[in-house]
Length: 491
Ligand code: BG6
Image (tube, rainbow, N blue to C red):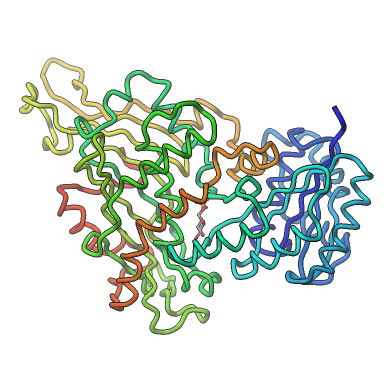
């Protein structure tokens, strides 16, 4: 087999995402020996930097995981030697043609594969893709482009973006990232469902009362107000991260583990869903709050946010899947910034045991005695199943308890970052964890009508104090469907 080379060009190399996630993930892959023998990393941005200045910037972001401490310094040096910089405009074909010359030099005439990571604002995606595809594509290997949300703000703008990208790229060349799909426990969802006999038979409206998808951050949008205010929490978290989890959770068994088979099942779920109704969504925005002598700024106190912004930093929504398996089961989503805790979980509440013999033996009320399965995506990854158990002793008292798979005890090795998995998959051409364009369209169709109404009707978000549990409206929404939110981190 002809020896091939790989070049990875990070466009927008001095941005936050590149520094925090992409370079560290590339280094971790290099450390693990997952990158080809011959690879180079190019940083591309407008700022004038020397190679060494880029290396210096990258080196400040690199760390070694606990299990990667051996020769860590040497490995970093080896990695940094493969990093180069090219400064250019994002819409200049000439600048990309110059990049092409530099890439060719490194490739030395071998079979050349090229991966572009667009770590830039979406309004320049198309410029970059145009220049890169016309002037800096590989002539004898593959050229792939990783893009990350926001993919538009609604069905229309997203469709427009897809059409523009497809003028220069085929669907096979586009890798749309949703980094939640690279998280260990999200990937494990299908394993849990399809490789264990005990869950799949229960996985339907017959046994499941409701499913909750919860995302919570304990910090505000400080510093990202400019971006965030254009999008809001529904577009930032729900339409992508939580909806992707929902699709994996609810899809039918795919024909195989091939990317197209899995993605087709996900699209089917999304297309079976009813678009979100305005009456099934509650929005909130955090306000300033003082706690323990410290004061926390409200969302609109951020200088990059307009004073009268109505952008939600919190949302709760009830969604339904109109198919035989899930008819009538509420899928409740909740996502918020500046809340009391940080975490992401899938919580499955099962139905009551019919004619329960032990009704009288519970210390707590029966409502708490139903089984629940919690998949904790982060932090402190784990899966636990809440069961009822006899309290040991001579009496007959029941207690709820957990069968608990705590990753930290069972798998002490540190879990790789989602971006490592996703970058590796893009390099290997594995598309399973990337969003296909019909999936993206279906996802937008579910949220676009409600988003439009919220904006056109200028719906005022319910204010909640920074560091609180969010607006009470979320509880009313849940109780409309006879649901009580589970508490993050709590069994
Ligand atoms: C991003 C959002 O997609 O996900 C951010 O734009 C959010 O607002 C982030 O903070 C959360 O990712 P993680 O991996 O830290 O949970």
